[in-house]
Length: 443
Image (cartoon, rainbow, N blue to C red):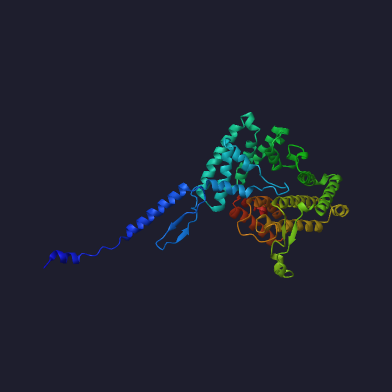
């Protein structure tokens, strides 16, 4: 018996090595991919892999692990409004170019990084990113203080932009130390220091146009503003003066204040009736099916106002808020009059003032969907989360003023409070959470 032959027959037959085959394919695929990446001049070549079935699939690009650059891009999208095709509008349009050109101005770099990471951290609930934002914020504060000791840097566009960004950081994080007011006042002081030199650069001119404190605190004359902005700034200044005159010393307020109030009311009314197409808004009725029902009285907004841009809606909110303040001053003044004086007063009646107040509040509420990006300029619904955060920034102060009107229905005040909560939590501007306390202000 041939044992060697038998042993050979008992040996298992060798099968193809699948692992080796897989390694060969993988190695070949990797080498081919590497060669393509080296030889290709296209930076966006899709990444592919091969399987045993010889099929090809495209992989999505990997998610970034460092959120720093994404935060800056998101901030510029949220808070920069480009000018339109006719060169109108625009908000912080100078900021991206200023940031790109001035990589040596470290205080500007740190300010941009701080506000960008804070904004994204609030919107996406990313505590680790907020820690990085606070570090950059602390560095920016120290560097800005050092820059204020240098005469050239003190008057620079970069320093003025940095102060503006610091105020936005404090607004986004819900500043409780009054630093936002200090940095806003600092911007005004820098403009006063620069004087006419403020307008030698396009950045300086645009920064002045976006100066938060206007009216009596405007450091330069209105001729440096665009006509409509100058007109509204003049109205707000006069409203502030009339409010003080009618509320601080009401019993001895001279009769000429009443004349000024009526004249200003008539001036604003005529302007709203003859405003050009660029600032005009139009109304969309969203609740036609509920007209005439009891439920319609509990639904807000009553209509949807749509503008061509966020800046237009911001201008209208400024006007409506100014009128609310003026109408409140009228109510306070009338409350001090005797029955005989009230009958002889040329001011509107209390019921008429109440109706005007409710109309102004409704106007502000009607602008909410558009300013939050829920409706586009064509009146069509937008996907959630597409709105710019700057629209919510423009809106939250108007909602606070509207919520301070005591004669509005409770359902409407609760709706306004809910919108401020949405801005604070979903949009990530935590200053709105403090502004929703208007009910305490009423009491």
